[in-house]
Image 1 (cartoon, one colour):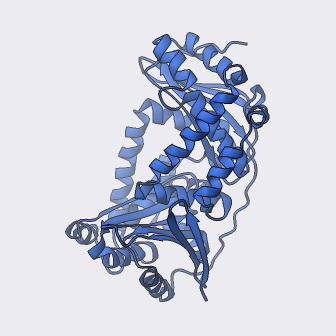
Image 2 (cartoon, one colour):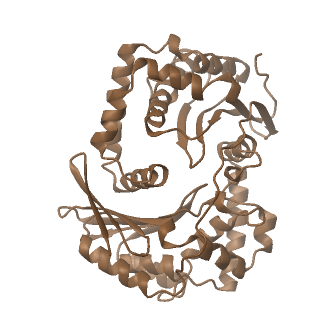
Image 3 (cartoon, rainbow, N blue to C red):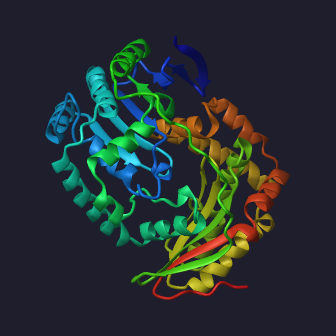
Length: 425
């Protein structure tokens, strides 16, 4: 039995299906498109790793593209994808792993069957497995040479201390070295189950054909069985203060982090508005102050990230003048009501809505957006509904939200560089 739910999404039409095995499907069929984009998103990111599995999610991502039952070598997968003129890739985050493909409409069924084969029938050859470990070690070293990426690794280890969200997808080199194929198979079988994943597709697809292929590809597989898809979520301990790690760089790099309990949808959207005002794009207050007026930074960015059991709002920047930059950022963060007027709220609401519409014109961004709302809020909101919520945010809401989520009681500043700049009292 398939459950159908029709949804209007701005001027697009989305449909949601659920197969009897629990697999969720979200589609936007566009008969005028020349391409199809399809992606499986699985709750199998690094936070689901046990302490002796750090790096398994990332290792699995690599191995998924190294051979399947029907395409038993990396070359055979690459040959099929290249000759179809398609683009295939995979990624791993803290909470989601994904595999995605984009292809011309004439080849979408063929490439979708390949995508299903990757998800349901991977084969893990020991020689390739051991070689891929070495590739990941190179990736770890390359990442650790990048100050922004190294800062993020150290940031989540400090702000999510003793919590699964502290697991970075790159993993632990020593644990990866000791991993064997059987470990990875166990990890995959525990998490790659139908009701733990969503298939999202847009463009030149046919919904009926998509469902037919999906049911055929998954119903015949013995290795996609219902195992333990349960996971206990818990709010991270709120850490306040600062951390520092030595890094051989000419600049100091730092993140200003506010960890809190998971935000509901309206608060989440309001926090996005606050991030736009503080540190996103050229007219943001921190960009104007730190770069345009004072020339103290090259760039500054603010982000709001939702997790199953937490919310993280953070600002990142770097400078040769950290002792000047840090107090300015803290002052603007903790007192932004002095700078944010009611008329500005209307401007930023309109900016947010228009940027959302623009970004969703890209098929990959659209899939990422839909998977985020499926994962965090158990379904899809119509864009018109989201716009209504954004526009319903009141001036006083921002200060309630700022006091609740962005206050000095949950501010943790993570710094890397040659010197440890002082944080003003």
